[in-house]
Amino acid sequence: MQTFPRFIASAASTAVVLGCLTACTSATTTAPTPTTPRTQVSTSRQAPPTPTVAYDVPTHASIEPELTITDKQCFGSAGCNFEYELAIAAIGPANFDPAERYRVTIVIDEGTSWERIHSLELTGTRTDVVTGRVSSDTHSTPVAAIQRITPL
Image (cartoon, rainbow, N blue to C red; front, side):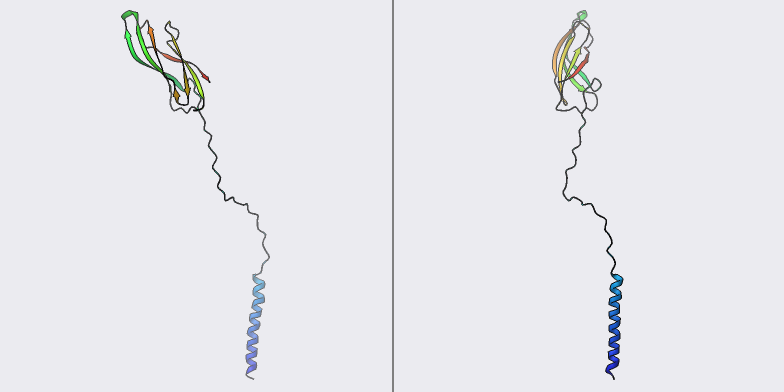
């Protein structure tokens, strides 16, 4: 009779284990949950977009003539002879397109009998520099003014 209680005890523990397996399995098994579709992330690196450069267009407000007197000889009431260099200077910061060319027409002492007209080329931030000579019947320093700006 000693084997019978062992058998009952063994059978009882087996029932508990089998019951747990059945109950534990049914408790942990759940219906699959629907997943939301995910967008696929690209792993390749794309170059950032190239920024568009906004260039300035030369205008009367953005450039000015730069007249430098290199020599001056005066003859009393007869007036003076002037030698000069003429260039174009930007007024403030300028970002002109280096691929575009402009003709800048400049007049020196407009409306006088000694008036001089020069056409300088402007490309990006580079400009022509011209030299010249003018005689006036006054002692006043010559004055330069932009007459027109023409795209080439």
